[in-house]
Amino acid sequence: MLDLSVLGAIGAALGAGLAVIGAGFGIGKIGQSAMEAIGRQPEASDKIRTNMIIIAALVEGVALFAVVVCFLAL
Image (cartoon, rainbow, N blue to C red; front, side, top):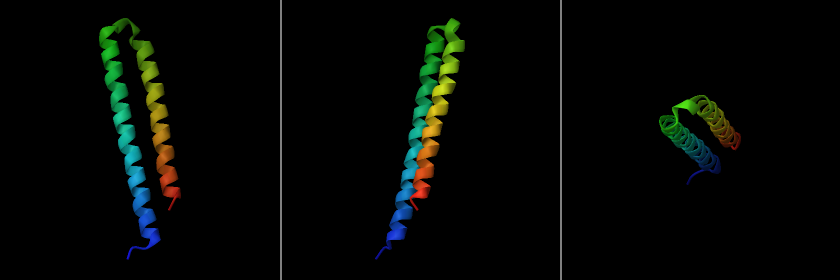
């Protein structure tokens, strides 16, 4: 029979993994959309790049927060 601490560790690991996978997909989608937008309007590339970096940093911050919460759940 599994101990509750083992189940907690498995849950924390799965939660951290899902958070990182979600962040990877999110940042990939941000990059894809930004490159498509720059391709359509090259003159706006500076504004698009700046917004892309800000949004990517926010996504990474949320992912880091989720991973920390998962490890604190242990």
